[in-house]
Amino acid sequence: MFVEDVNHFHTLAGLPTPAASLYRVTGRHPARSSRYHNVNLSQGLGDELRCVFRAGRDVWGYMCLWRAADAQPFSLGEEHLLAALSTPIGETFRRSALLRPNPVIGVPDGPGLLVFDRTGALESLNEPAEAWLRRLPLTRLSHDDPGATPIPAELRSVVNKARAIAARRDTGVARARLRVGGRWVVIHGFALREAGSEGGRTALVIESAKAAEMAPLIVRTYQLGRREQQVIRLIAAGLTTAEIAARLSLSTHTIRGYLKRIFEKVEVSTRGELTAKIFADHYVETMNPDFATDL
Image (tube, rainbow, N blue to C red):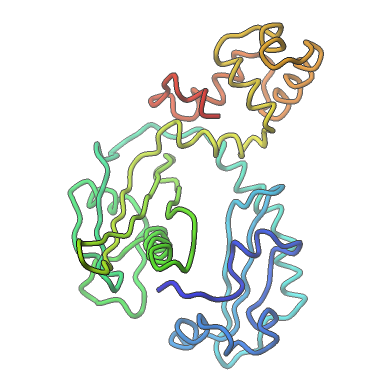
C-alpha cells in the first residue's frame, strides 16, 4: 500500500547524488519512516538503499536494495558505489529504448480493463486483460492470498499511485510505460467512486502504446532539444531548409547547424534516414498525421 514517506524515487531524481539509504536519510532512525514499519519490518527487512538511474537529466530506471533486519545498514561507500553506476546504467536503459520493436504477435486487439478493490486485490477483469496478464511477468507478494491472481509489479505501482492521488497524498498522473515482447505498452490508473460514497476501487487500462504517446519518450531517448524537435517536425512535414528557416524566423545557417546536431544524435546522414529512424522504426503500424505535431 502507498504511504507517505521519505527517500522517494522522485526526490532522488532531483538530487545531486542519485542514491541514498533509509538509515542515512532518517539520521540513523528508520523508525521515523512509515514504510519501515508497514513494509520492511513485516518482511524481516532493515535498511534499504535506493537509487535512480539517470542519463543527463532524465531518469530511465530505479533500484531498491534491502538488508536483513539484523544486518548492518548500508555504508556510505556502498551508496557512492551505486551512485557511480547511475549514469552508465541509465545510459544503457536509454539506448535500449532505441531498439527496433519486434513484430506484433499475440497482442490483444482491445484494451484490457482491471478493477481492484479497496485492499488492492484484483476484483474483476475483461478478456483482453487476461491476455495481457499472460504476456507480463507476474509478481506474488508474501502477504498475497494463495488463491489470488498474481499481479505484475508495474500494475501494482500504478494502482498505488492512483490510490495515493485520490487520497491527496500524491499528485500527477497514474501511468506507466513498459516493454512487452519488444513492444511498448501503456498502463493508465483511475480511482473509481460510486455516487454518494467514498469509493475505494481502482481501475487500470492496459493497451498498446500509440505513436503519439510514444513521441515524448522517443524525443527523450534521442536527447533532442526544443528547437531540434521543431526542426524534425517540419522535416517530417516535407519543408526545405529555407522553408524551415522562414517558419522559425532563423537563418538557413542556423537550421543547418541544428540538422548537423540532429543527425549526430540520431546517427543518420540524410533526412530520409532521420524520418525513417524516428517514425518508421518506432511504431510504423501506428503512424498518423498527428504524430509529427505531437513532438
